Length: 399
Image (cartoon, rainbow, N blue to C red; front, side):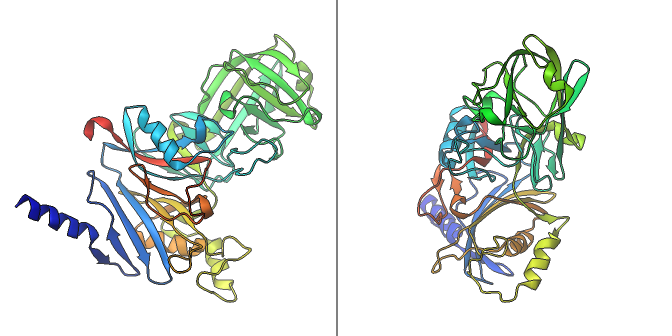
């Protein structure tokens, strides 16, 4: 009898269930309450997607993010990040996908730098840039989505300067950037483009609701300063001509203040930023709709110079009132899966039931991991080193 039940369970696992515009194939029996995993074959075009659905009401399941190599500078596979998180012992990673956009090449030593928001275990590691394409979860499980922005200042003496970036490339447009130990060993800055203030006595980690005094340990003009383990580096462009600049000298003191807006984002425990908000209130981003309508010739599987219209491997995060969705679409493999445009990706998310969604990094980075195994077929034929990752974790004691 027991053997018969096992056979029935396996048959159910491999059974295909018809959908309005595609076919679901359950990949595993529900290994945990509140978690569903399946392969979705979209029959409008030749595209294979892998989907994880997490119930928002299941208390043993959690949303988390992870930083490659536990620092900004550097890259790592999704599986390696998941394995390191599981090794902490309190929770186990059951599903993992690649995260946001950033510098994948070396880019003069900046390989690994993220281009948008990353909050991990309450620590603000990088600030929001594409404010609409951000997603976060608070300690009590509330979901947040854009717009969000950082409001930060550095006060010294009677002066106050705006702080534009945290742990970003010097060339990314900020006049004043703060580098914390999460960046890596040093700032990778150029001596001719600005100066660096070495800050000590700064309580770490940095958080999304922060107001702390600091002291200046010294000022460096050589560039690429070592970042103190118990402090930070404040880089100021040579274009900054404010009177406050002359006030930064050894033993001077001031206050660093930052917060996210709207204020509920200050409660984010984990958060990640992508590029382009796909869905808002159940509707596809109007820019994507207009681009799709004006496309002169729609050819399934065609790659294009305009990435929004190109059929590519894609990764997305979506949700509704009840469920979190992690979705990976394979692509660049004509006999198997050609990939999706962003409009098509958004359309499929609506089919699956999402009402809100953001686009994460795609291409060869798109990776879908379940229980330490890569389930999808990355277009590069192997798992790629990426910048950060998104997890669904479970409490160890419930396993």
